Image (cartoon, rainbow, N blue to C red):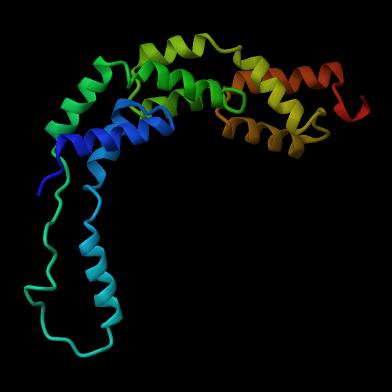
Length: 192
């Protein structure tokens, strides 16, 4: 028995009630798993586990599940996603804004751009959302102050700070500006 449109819609709305999803992400989630199992099928599984060590005959008609659910088709999922977008329940713009708002204080533009691209958000939307955020230099400086708070004393410490900020997706030019300005101004949070 195939999952009905109502079952698919209910599952999509349950997912969207928890958080925002991009169209690609929600579609993949809906296609990934069939509708929930029947209660009778779960009981049969429990009984079969209980009888696992007992010698049992081959499958009989009374041990087979009554109904088997199939995964929804891609056509059904796309129709549902179109309807949700039309009703403004699903929006890639809203998803991108939410994702950037949560992750921008800790990550650079490169990483944010990559994450949104992987979720199926188009370049124009990503550029628009990133332009609304504080500049990357100030975010990088805030993160650097929180993590390190002082200028590097030697080359090993400088490399450690650079690697940390680069792993967060900040541009190398931005990282160098932050570390150089710390050395010139003598920033040291521990002295304050």
